[in-house]
Length: 289
Image (cartoon, rainbow, N blue to C red; front, side, top):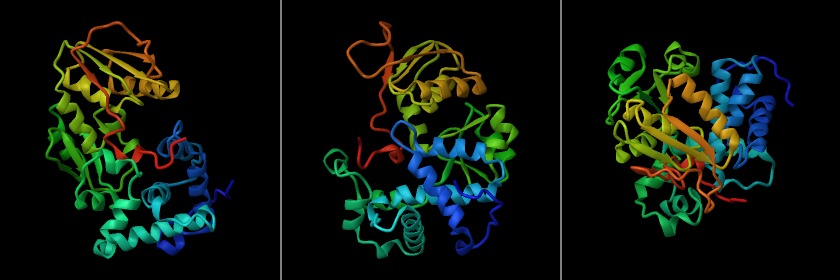
């Protein structure tokens, strides 16, 4: 474990201290298909209360830069060195994306199987390597009200989507704890509108995970009707339970399901959501095991 003293935010050279890199490496090493890096990171930050918002943001940048540039790393000098290399690649790309050959982007940005399954243009691969924007989904009809509350919020193209450009820790805001918004990528928000569930209908979110899209379905259904939520990991369903409680979503039932022939329910559905592999490509595995 690193020495969890106060880290002083500042320049990249200050950020790349041995202890901070070691903590970032620890989060990456503990992550797996069953325990995604973002979940490990949240648990780590919660445990290490000595970290402030600037420090957690810098560590978050390092962890996700590593995964975003994983295909470029040499993996020979150790994980801290790989993290540094990923941050350098990220900086270079932000300064001049044209310096990166499109053939390299196609070969290294996504797993090999993507080429045979997903038709993609060059601009898509470039978009994958940029630092992602932070999107929020406000409750139905409350998007503009949320924009007015958040100084650095901007209305998005999708209904009630909000692009957040600030640096405040949103998990600590009263609006978040009141269930006024969810952190959800705009591509995931689009899935809910494509489904277009209606109040009173019955839906099945077959790979619900921690429930981001289920919360959107419920909001679009005005918390009426029924949504079955299933996942193969019980810990994800436990987190779904906490998220639905905060968002005051009650029109759902959850059940473990491993994808086998025995379904979790015999209910007839108006619609089934199977978002696989995932609209958020950050969850795609390069080397699944």
